[in-house]
Length: 145
Ligand code: DQA
Image 1 (cartoon, helix red, strand yellow):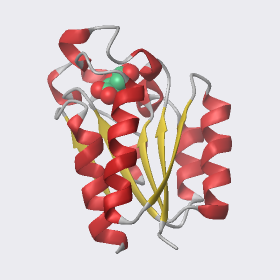
Image 2 (tube, helix red, strand yellow; image 1 turned 135 degrees about the horizontal axis):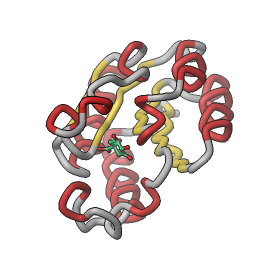
Image 3 (cartoon, helix red, strand yellow; image 1 turned 30 degrees about the vertical axis):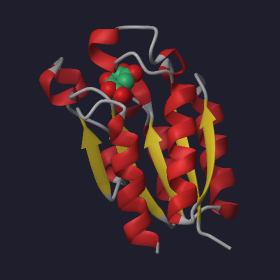
């Protein structure tokens, strides 16, 4: 049985491909997930996808991942910059945590430069567009297999 991972997206990321296309591109989250699903299969990883606009739901998904997942790829959206509770949930997870931001958060407002998730993440990818998810998956595969 392959190693299991969770790809978790936070608020507004359900609108990727529709909102602020200059920043987030034109590809939908469903297409990104579809692509990552195929890639994960090639890597022999089992992947689960979740997205929520609610902080508590993201925390619940992370707690659930404690029971089945070896790694989490997370884009917590704006909660990256605000949510100590989500960081605490990640701290309770013992596997690999990789953080993704579609846009280059360092090239934007100052408040986006700090991510609570980064205090737990084993690696961070930012500014590679939705390709960042694929890169994170590749890294996850090399760390887990
Ligand atoms: C984001 C960057 C965040 O600052 C922003 O709030 C998002 C998306 C990104 O993927 O670039 O919602 O996480």
